[in-house]
Length: 124
Image (cartoon, one colour):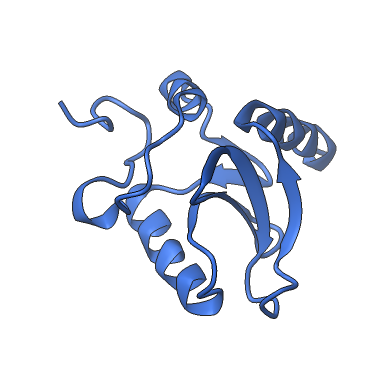
């Protein structure tokens, strides 16, 4: 059974998914609840995630990043990086290589708490 069956967004699967990647369970549980858009953040659906991943690889060739959320009011992208899929890396896309990383969260839950705080601050 595909992992994206009955989820509110399409996930990256098959040939579009890098061999080193697997979705972390906390992310999958969050998506299963339907919590996929909380301004200014939104989770990227499969084709958009795959497309952004290709762009990140082109702009930051030294890094293997898997993007899963985009901050809609900036060029910040929440990613997992090869070698530590527990951590969430915030990359400011289109920055010069070496200047792209703006934050690190040790767990997905830590990132989600911060994203919810952004949502509360962002709402009028």
